[in-house]
Every structure is written in structure tokens, then in C-alpha cells.
Length: 173
Image (cartoon, rainbow, N blue to C red; front, top):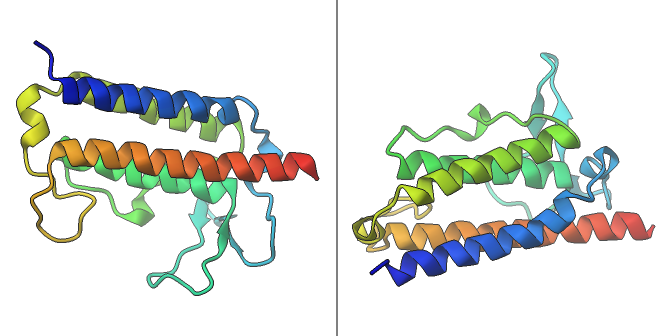
């Protein structure tokens, strides 16, 4: 009998992704670095043709409003690092995660991350769900791979909602 926890986690992820696709299909290149307020975080061009995210090691107060660009980079960072951990690879540092740019390149990057995630999920066994998981929790805990899978979907849903709201506000202007 298949593990119902794995089936439920996969269903939850697929549902979240389908809601995200609604916005991904409608994003324009101009949506990505639109700054809705003066106090925001975005991605800035670097001299070598790449992109650098605004960042602070201690969360500022007030927290800056992120742009769609920053949010898509952020998804790529945390999701890639989650996959690194689950695949038992050395996790990439924040500065090692490049952002591909506005519009179609960023959307394609996110869809590729989804494909990688689905391949990872398809390779899991029932026993894997109960294995200890060191990420995204900073200290050793009794949390498992199942917890990490649930966290990925929750984090994706939060970021998808933020991107969707920014897209809707910009379109309404």
C-alpha cells in the first residue's frame, strides 16, 4: 500500500503549484522589478552582467517590501538549498544562487526547479519520510524529511501569494 503521507504531501504540493501557475502565466517582464513602495528589496544588476539581491544579515525593521524579482530569486535560493540537503549535496550559499533575469527566464527557472523537485519526490520511499532532516531548521531537531516536504509547500504557497498580490496591485494601477 502506498504511503498516504507521501501521497498527501504530493497532492498538497501539486495544488499549491497549480495556484502559482495562474500568476506565472500572467507575469510580464515589467512586473519583476516594479517597486510598489520606496522601501523595498529587489535584484540589482552587477558589473559582470548578473544580479545581486538586496540583503541584510539581520532582518530590518520595518521589513522591506520585496519585488517579484526578489521573491523569485528567494524561491530559487531556499528551494535549491532544500534540494541540496535532501540529495545530500553541500548546500549552496546565498551568494552562489544566480537569478536568470526578468520575465520568461525567471519563470522557466522556477518551472525547472519544480521539475527537479518532482523528480526528488518520485525517488522517495516510505522510509525516507521519517529520516531526520537538518533543513530548514538551524539547530538539530526531531523534524523529518516529511516536515521538510511540508515546509517547502508552505513556503512556496506564501511566496506565490506574495507574487500574485504584487502582480494584481501593479495591474490595477
